[in-house]
Image (cartoon, rainbow, N blue to C red; front, top):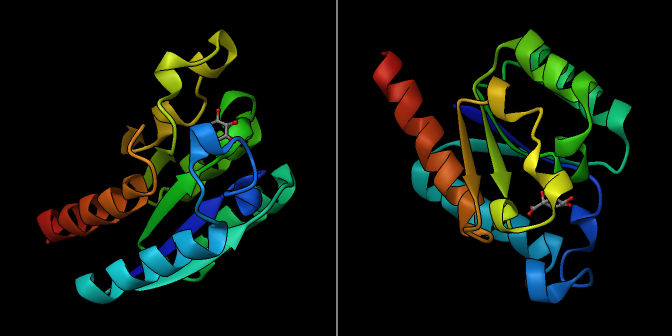
Length: 147
Ligand code: DQA
């Protein structure tokens, strides 16, 4: 089983950006945690992060041709603005879990809109980095239920 862990803008500066909201751990530390969890689950994991909307659309499309079984996706600020990214997720039909490190429901009004929520199989918010590993557990279980 192969998962893509996809992150949007400013996730590459975790640890630097608003540590009171996103914590002090870096993007590399996040990837290390996910790799360790993937090993435990016996799944393959690939990472991609971009600050550019079209790059994220390209990565989602690529995952279809690469036979990715599930996407763990934090679209970051594009969550609240991007029809193109939501269309890509819907278009490829790969089960995608929307993850947010912070509890977006308790933040600004403009963060209350998510274009991804409707096309995702699940949304996880406010669990910090654990949201990513929770999403992997969910996708493994989902694939198991399908068989
Ligand atoms: C975020 C929440 C978004 O509103 C924000 O723009 C981000 C990160 C989160 O992980 O909590 O960049 O997706």
